[in-house]
Amino acid sequence: MKVKHLTDQIISKKSFLCLGLDSDIDKIPSHLLNESDPVFEFNKLLIDSLNNLIVAIKINTAFYESDGSKGWKTLEKTIDYININYPNLFTIADAKRGDIGNTSDKYAKAFFKHMEFDSITVSPYMGNDSIEPFLEYKNKHTILLGLTSNNGANDFQITNDGNDLFKKVLLKSKNWKNSNNLMYVIGATKSSFLKEVRTIVPDSFLLIPGVGAQGGDLEETFKNGVNKNIGILVNSSRSIIYAGNDKDFLEKSYIEAKRLQAEMNILLDNIND
Image (cartoon, rainbow, N blue to C red; front, side, top):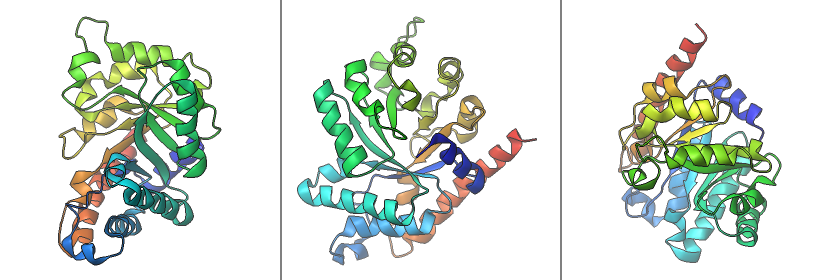
């Protein structure tokens, strides 16, 4: 998917909301457990209900890989369902891959060619030759871990001495081949750093997790992260998909997603005033 199409969807839906499918069979409503594939049914119902409020879907592959071949099949069924029925939704494989070049090449083929995701999250630790195989794919996007929302980000990513590692990652990545296909993960709980991020990568899209269950502030995130093309996707997972755990779970999930979308609508309108 081209970035312009993503921006057009944001403007059309008045939303920059990304739905995170961190779907856990131990947490989904019990009445779905009678289905042949409970997690797929859970995902399908959420996608059908919320597609008009969201512009992207992030599938955390760990929640599927943990169930072996059965979980992998659910993952494939989910991405196929989105690609066939909702091709305007931007899809993210939250896989956090990153290895030597020939291994990254296989990862890229798996997620971009076989499953046809629009993007994938990757770890930059091994450097350019571990990332460039992903960047070779036209209209596919590689989302580099920049500054994450977890507490452990303070171990390495932020040093508080002016030489923050995440800044070095952003700067270095701009020189990689096909770097125009890069996006970046910046956690909402680190929104105070977003202005600095924007001085380094002013035009790139940012995937911003951490709004909702992790406590990130949506308005602050938007104010510091938005660019001329909007340029942000705010992900919410648990606060939406587990808003309810009974037969009314879709209604409660819709209410939470609609609340976020309504806030986004106001923020988007304000930048045009």
